[in-house]
Image 1: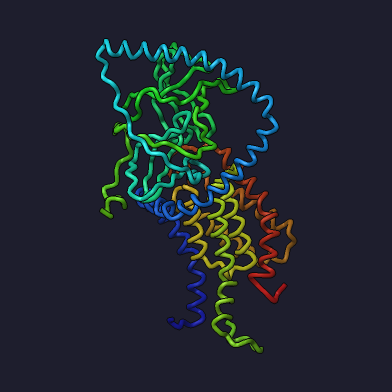
Image 2: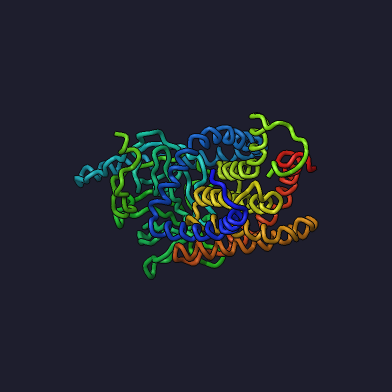
Length: 287
Length: 182
């Protein structure tokens, strides 16, 4: 170690903080100039933490389930009655759906309808909330050589969750539809009007830019639109709900605050995708 | 520094030196660990804000009471960890932590002699300022005015988290990190 005189050492000690504060500003500029660098550093950290969080998530999910079970036991009688009634109603709807499905199939056969390609999908576990104070996203744990790419679409068992925005070697980040930066072309199901679903970081994204004269109706179903070639048509997104300030919002069909497992669909749509990195991704490098 | 103080001390054997360095590294290590734990999937509401609250409280506390164990480069690294875990624009957390560290160092002489209440009041001011700076810088760096409600919530949470955390940290400070002075 270099021996310095005491005044020099004191002067250096006094200088460290200002120099580091300047470095912080430099880091901000660097993050702004080269967004890829920050993204890569983040995914490297996420890759390292995802397996650990994956292990931690298991017992935590157990605990949460146990609490849920205890709560459910209390309401079991009432729920049973409600479910019986609902089951009855759904059985009727099932008959209707089956009839419509058969009719749809015959009509399509008569029309020489080009069928949509069946998308391939993989299922991944959500290991952590990858949002921040000003972002809504989740982190997925994936195996190596997963083949996930940016722009793939994430759904849970009920509806649209979001899109893959960052991919690492062992993890991926999915930007939720509630994030401020999320913009999704949608269709109001009954009026067939197109609109935009705009995230606000709140629990319910807002509906904007619907055509004049077709007011979204309360409770109307919202599905994705194939416009801009970023999403396939007809994925369930949610239902319209008017806020207290009378602005139409969408109650997401997916349970975004309790995501455990999501399916990542590759529809092969490359309409609006974040620019792919020019440098090889970690998965490519290994081959 | 130890060489210049008179007195009889045990020989600095390997284990003793390991013990000393572990105690010296305790503040930084626990802060980093707490940050990683708050970023884990605990499913708590407001966990993103909790991460900020933990970072600010720990850095303020240790800068005030054991600055020797938390030199500026370590604060810088903790800030980088916060930025990466919290998905904030890079550099914002680093700047805030360094400024908090600097302020705590500057007011140290006055604050360590005061009671808990005054220290907490000063921290409430720092938490409010930090939330405002984070909001302003984040807005500036993504060229959009962000909603101010999360910033207010974050400030309140940070201020509220400090007293319980300070109780634990004070205990650790008196026993683990600085034995013999309690």
